[in-house]
Amino acid sequence: MSTSDGFPTNAIYGFIKTIDRMRERVCPTHIAVLWDGGLDEGRTEILEEYKADRDSMPDDLEVQLDAIEDWLSASGIYSYCAEGVEADDLIATICKRARALSIKVVVASADKDFFQLIEPGVSLLNPNDKSGALWSADQVKSKTGVMPEQIIDWLSLMGDTVDGIKGVPGIGAKTAAKLLVEFGDVESVYSNLHSIKSEKLKSNLIEFKEIVLRNKSIIRLNENCDMEWELKTTEIRKGDKGRLEECYLNWQFGSLLESLNEFDM
Image (tube, rainbow, N blue to C red; front, side):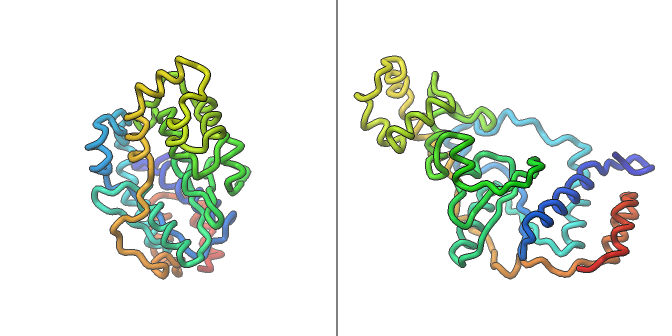
């Protein structure tokens, strides 16, 4: 998808439609779009391979980011990026601050790392899930076999290949869940190694103990980022119809341009 002069617009259009669908599903009073500002230095110091194998952003996607920022600004939607801070940590920080104000939060992401944030008042909406289901602890338990508060330990045991984090050999999602259901957390697993019948599993756990404990510090999201944020900054503001019209004309989004005839923001 591109304009007549070849400028790619597929990511812009997909982003707009995704935001629209989520707004229809959740009807939020506040929205924050958080961007990655680079890898967390603390994590890369602990593990050099952390997210090292991820492909770089395609050029035709990168050139659309400024346009997406323009659309967010024109639509009255808050966005934020901090140098050297991962978006995951910004989201975790806002979740904590919003919950302290008794504000319900919906995290929009398909990333399983956010399972750890789910609690009463915090749910997860997967933008790729056409059902529009809001995930709570029950859905996390059904998907992983463990509760949200056990997700860090679950990932620490089995590793996360997407992020370049190795786990204990022989421990996958089911075995990690079984151990945590039985013992509760990683520390209790290691306190009860004598109760584990499989000698091979026990041996691997002993050999990779330092890696498992290291993984916990990497996987745990930082809820205390140093960021300037107040609830009022994320209020959905009145959009600028003129700017949106200009955006849609430039990107040749005929259907979205027509929808502005019913503009009421």
